[in-house]
Length: 213
Image 1: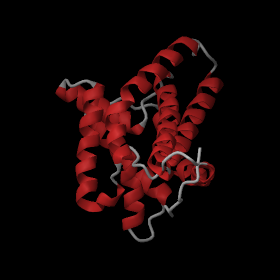
Image 2: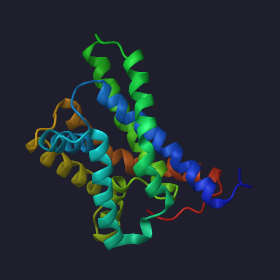
Image 3: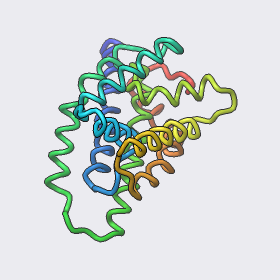
Image 4: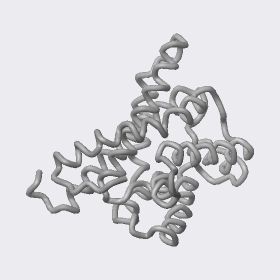
């Protein structure tokens, strides 16, 4: 693996991170107990504009990309562009998979457990994407940049701030809010900070330079 060019190793780690993130995200959506914070924003704007989820996801990421370019362009890499346009097939695969394997009728305890599992999977995936240094999804880079730019703001609080903003704006515009959303808001930030060392270990196995986050 170490014989591959550095940029290829970074993109492979980013691809792994995106696949893991979307696994958790689509598990969350398939449970039908409220969308995750980013999807609430997408849903709300979609209901007001009539644009599809896919169109809006790309548009929001483009807006985030412009903001990052103006404030912290060093975070923009080839993988950031990759994330904007290559999520569709991965999302469709997991949506199909969970639509087939998740039981329609399930105990409440199992649903809560799966919500928590989905949140933790998303946190691991985002951490892997960030540690790849190939350029994570633009919306996932925003809390990382806030953490670096705002003195004393821990990464978990930066993530929770961004998630909370997505929830408020999305809900006002008509997005779906549920118990799963509250759990996601609570776990995404701390989960990301907790699992960053795991992502760093993966980067080490791929012989990638690891920078402080």
